[in-house]
Amino acid sequence: MGPFSTYQACIALTGLAFGLLAYLLSAVSGPLSKVPGPWYSKFTEAAGKYHLLKGRKPIYINQLHDEYGPIVRIGPNEVSIKDAAAMQRMYSIKGEFPKAWIYQILVLGVESVFSTISIPLHRRYRRLLSSAMSDSGLARHKQVIDGKVRLAIQRMGEETERRGVTDVLFWSMCMTTDIIAELSFGQSFNQLETGERNQYMRDLSSVGSSQSIRLAFPILTRISQYIPFPIPIIRRGTDVLGRIRTRAGEMLQHHYRVVEEEGEDSKPTLLSKLYRPKLGEEGLEFQEIRANAQSYIVAGSDTTSNTLTYLIWLVCKHNDVRVQLMEELDTLADSYEDSDLKKLPYLNHIIDETLRMYSSVPAGLPREVTAHCSYFPSFFRANVLLTNVCQVPPEGIEFCGHWIPGGTTVSAQAYSMHRDEVVFPNPLRFDPSRWERPTQAMKDSFVPFGGGSRICMGVHLAKMELRLAAARFFLTFRNARISTADGFCDEDMEPSLYFLMTPNKKRCLIEVD
Image 1 (cartoon, rainbow, N blue to C red):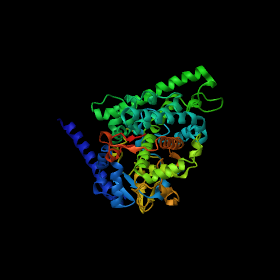
Image 2 (image 1 turned 120 degrees about the vertical axis):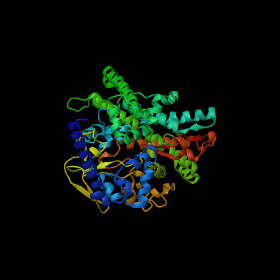
Image 3 (image 1 turned 30 degrees about the vertical axis):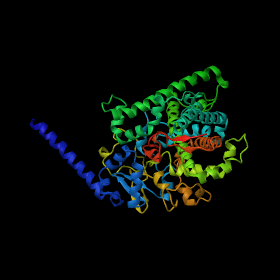
Image 4 (image 1 turned 45 degrees about the horizontal axis):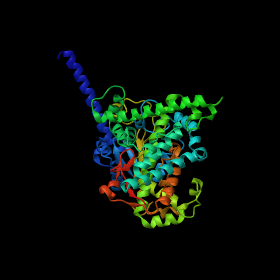
């Protein structure tokens, strides 16, 4: 090595040493140094990523809150909060805390209403998409939704006749996938008709674990989108999203052709008016509609099906709950609709209690305290391949008695908020009656669909599906009971907590008559 190259190496090593020193000093003496938490969280996110990949991160974060209190440092530049007032501020409709950069890792290509960190783009998407997902907008699709629910119940009965047991999780997944597909594309995936556990169903079922991989290795994930990557675990997450995006594009193109051929006579969907707007109305480009349709498919299938599965399992486990539910359901007329189910208090208490205990998205929804810059050198942050991470200004905020500097990622996870024993006494007990007279603290801490302007747009569809499916299931199968076939037991229902919460063994066997 010549003198000049030796000199360059010395300069590089010196720069690296100063960068490392700045990083260590900011970790131990910066504003976040006073936030309680394990000592290693000052220097690394490794522990959190380990638990993320094991499907246990919300449990790990909750244990930290039990040990350190309502605010805990979980990484060099990240804080988790278990405080209703702080959470309400973080997720307020004012948009003071934009979504963190990490959401961009969850998508391929064009951003969707779910993934965008741009407040103006999110407002545009929401303005164009929200009316179709409102209660009044969904009214035009109620026959499609109820028809799929009825078919799912029928298929559960048919499976029981063949093998003496039915997998409620599988048929719930088929139902929700077919519903959101028909509402988005004018045609379903026909999963209820075929009953196939095909590649597409496997992809949808693995979204949670695949997204966890992407979140754990954001830089490698971004690289793998552009060049083939030799590490299978990294490539798998990209491949899963790629196949889902391809299927969404194919279905969307088919419906484009149908609309062109049939015009005003074509079946309306949640998206159709956006790619054929009337004069003076705003539409969306094909890539934007595809990105949002993909988000609809992912968010509208695995989430509601998991919640419905846990609801059925919980009611079957608690006979006192079932008895009270049946007394209420028996008051319905034979021709009941969802509008009638909205008026049943105990059914809706059961739904809320299931959402409290088994939120489909249990982890924190990261936000950023915006500022001119972060306290950490940019090359130590995982978002080096991303842009528009921080916005300007303001300069930080105080949460739970601690100053949080600008550029810090903050989150409050539903898993912890819903298990606060001060707000929800005996939080591990399934008790729908707690919702008969909910306190303001319960309402403020209850966030199964997120909060603020970024609250899940699918909340009305999800609750409609849950009401209809729960009512039709228990009115059809009055003696439904948990099976022990094939070794099925409560341990199979222990949740895997990746990006989404799912039963550990991905099955729920119920015997129905």
